[in-house]
Amino acid sequence: MSAPVSPEFPFAVDDAARDQVGRILRKDGREEAFLRVGIKGGGCSGLEYLFALDAVARETDLVWSTEGVRIHCDPKSARFLAGATLTFSGNLLGGGLRFENPNAERSCGCGTSFTPKR
Image 1 (cartoon, one colour):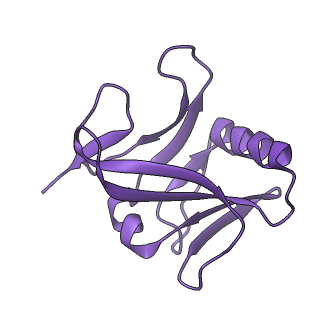
Image 2 (cartoon, rainbow, N blue to C red):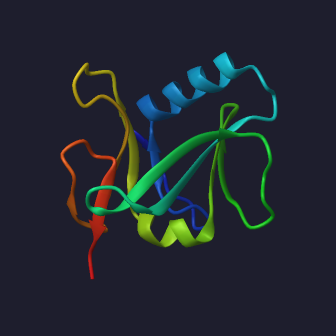
C-alpha cells in the first residue's frame, strides 16, 4: 500500500519504503535527521537518483512526513519524480530503495539512474 501523493509532495512512498527509512533514521539516532531525495546529472542513463541522510532542512524543500519519518525533496528534482513511487525490496540482488518512475523513458539495470521522457 502506498501513502498518497500530496499536492505539495511529488511522489508516493509505499509502506515498505516508509518502514525502511524509519529503520535507517532510528539507527542514525539524530532526532532532526531525515532522508533527502533528489536527482542529479550522471549515472549510466543520464540522471541519477540521490538518497542521503541530512539534518539541515532548506527553505524550499518539499516535505513528506508520517509516523516520525520525514523525506525531503528539492523542487528541481520534484519535476522528475512527479507521480513516482518510492519502494523498498529486501532482495539480495536488486534490493534497496528504488523508484517506480513514470517519467523514465528507460532505466539502468541497477535502477539507480534513468533517462527522462522527452
